[in-house]
Image 1 (cartoon, rainbow, N blue to C red):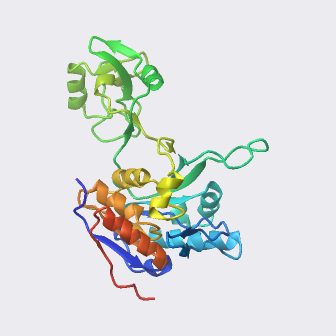
Image 2: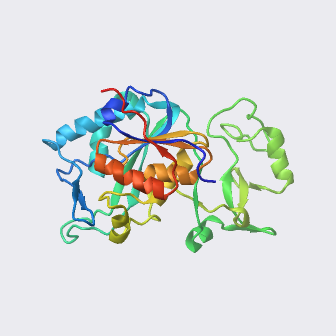
Image 3: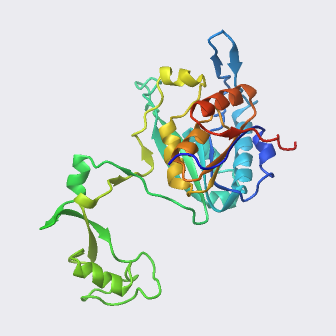
Length: 330
């Protein structure tokens, strides 16, 4: 169910936001300039040219700036929250080496988004078809696993066991670390780190025929007919980039697919939670938050009035009840 939350669109530098709302956000997504020494632009139907700055005196200066931004944004997260930084691999790798150690220790993974066909000459090197989304995990945040439909090869390899109920895969029933009340012997098995379930639950699963007793250790049966699909990991090759025609509908040169932002919000922001995007571009994060719904809210800002104008129009067209808050003090 879409909507239910509040949506704010404002003019602000990211640096001015950092001290304004400490510990307020469940999820922060940033798609900052990539430091490519370019001036992206778009041209309106009437010929009006609108530019968006992406230039620093040198790349090292850019990395210092972005590292400081991520350090500051980390403080805006709640005790348990996610920060996603969308960049290229070089940018995210260099930033990770310069952020504060508390942020570096919270590094979770890099998501590789297969965005396009390579534009460089593959005769002289590997084609670059991916963007990097660096994921920072603070505390023990909300996360909802998302699944992709099972492809035949994966299904055949994963659901290779069969009984009278059908094909099934094997899932762990033993623990990854010792837990009170989970150290016990059952049918001759005494796992080193105990069981994943309390003894009553293990016995219940066994009585239901859902325990597979292997040669070395037991497993839980997961039947193909009950499977939600293949869990999506950190390679996203199922979300195509926008075509030139789709991008021109919003007139923003670095627009990201709505489906990608919906996935990030749906998996990493709890119902009723709050999202921040301080580089709003054309408002895709806010629209995604509205579409995912369940009371989720989004604050989105930009330093560019043309960007805010585009974002406001896009959000209004999508039914997002957007408000414009006062500018934060500078």
